[in-house]
Image 1 (cartoon, helix red, strand yellow):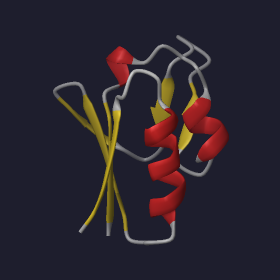
Image 2 (tube, rainbow, N blue to C red):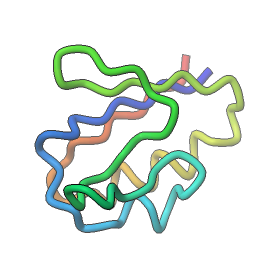
Image 3 (tube, one colour):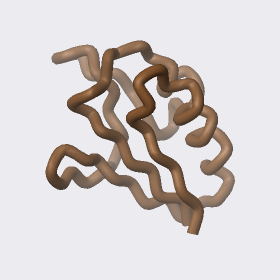
Image 4 (cartoon, rainbow, N blue to C red):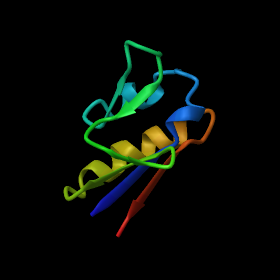
Length: 76
């Protein structure tokens, strides 16, 4: 299982996460910030649990590319 966490309020809208992991991320038309698709929000943290381990690499690449380091990816 892959767990992806996004601190959306700190997003600067660079779009790298969408380019590298379009299955999990998209940009909001309202405020230009990243949205973690199908995530649950709690206290400013948006968390998504993915049961497909193949998503780890794309999400990890998005995490590494993020200039403000607001994406965390773990495999459990």
